[in-house]
Length: 150
Image 1 (cartoon, one colour):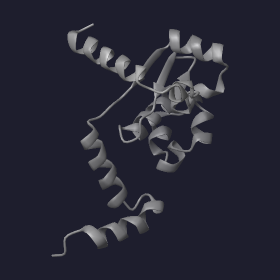
Image 2 (cartoon, helix red, strand yellow; image 1 turned 90 degrees about the vertical axis):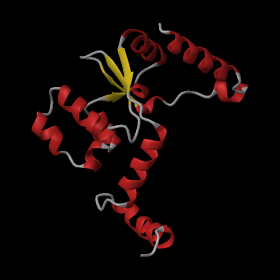
Image 3 (cartoon, helix red, strand yellow; image 1 turned 135 degrees about the vertical axis):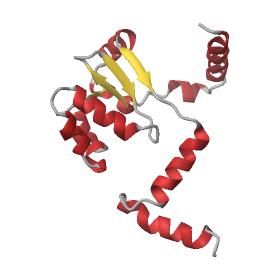
């Protein structure tokens, strides 16, 4: 382990020790961890970090969808938990011993992104995209109230 990695692990451990008993006793939410028992991985999904692309890729890797079928899926299908979990199970679908086994034995991975880039990406995606109807009205209101008038 590199010096930087050791420092990060140490910092994280220190932060965890500062959590209150209530925070530490909360049960984890395993729904954001996706499991493929055939390929032995646990993927932690993080929104705005190529999440849609990775979900499509993982759906294709199940062998139940072709690359074309996976890439043709619309945004709402890819992010629909009922649809997604019919191909890739969430870790929450397993018992505590089964969860422990997967976390101890499977390859676990996630992708991260610079927080500022992630914020700017989310803003652009939600404010300037017509693909997501729930945000259209909000986007118009924000643009009307906060964008500089020319």
